[in-house]
Image (cartoon, rainbow, N blue to C red; front, side, top):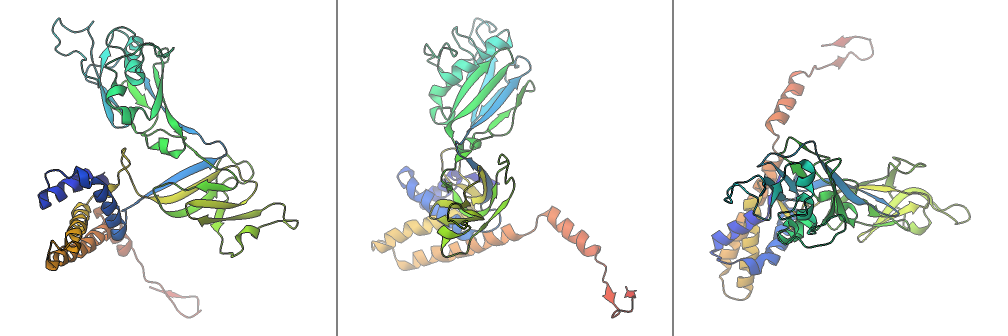
Length: 375
């Protein structure tokens, strides 16, 4: 499990007595990334899989409503919680219990009007698009949720099918990044297609792909499932020095090697007849802002590293004695080792499995070819 870096920021600010650390945020993020790479133990990073083809694809997902929500039900789109509340037609003369906030959707008498309603208060579609008429994209819905949470909700386009009761979410960006858009629902009548949008694919052209920005290490490359000729074939990293000629046919016309090599942030495929590529890699987890996530249990160690780096600046400028930075450095190495040790410890379930394996071991000895086995 990973936690938001804000928890580390708060620890650093408290320990150093910083009332406003906003101007240090850029440095904090960079130092946090450095610290996590230095710890580098099990589960510090996450394993990701990305598929590429010639055109790329946008990630999509749906939320299907079987019936009108109950007041207080909610759905979560990319971290934004939207609550369904009684609308004006269902509320009292006072405003108690009515949908007034930008993250509250006014409920109507039918599911269709809850999802799409051009009158005051709008429906779910109006809140997500900002238009009064979502089909023609005209008018302006002033209190729309998308205006209050543009960074999160503007990452996708939204369409409403009132007949089927379906909200379709489509990432605006072509590529795998849209797969990080999260979906959830606590509404028994609203079924999400998955915990995230799916189907986002990167672009693969001229036997080259651009590796993701959060790539730490490529684990494997294989031909994708939509490739009819070479589906699931595993590609191996080439060790050849003359990479441009590996796998060439006799007349130098085509490459036919199931090999790849990495040059900077580009991955080069040495086969001219592959339509789709899937890459498995170790990634640095990030939140919806693009900020690094911290492995749970590493917060203290990462905060210590940030404090050490901050105080080194003061030491280099002659404003701090060396023994303080040395003490910070010493504690960082201790906490770094502790984080690695804690991560390496088996969980209670893993310990049970180890115990079961150990208790069922049966020593077998061979009698030297006589056909007898002694226990």
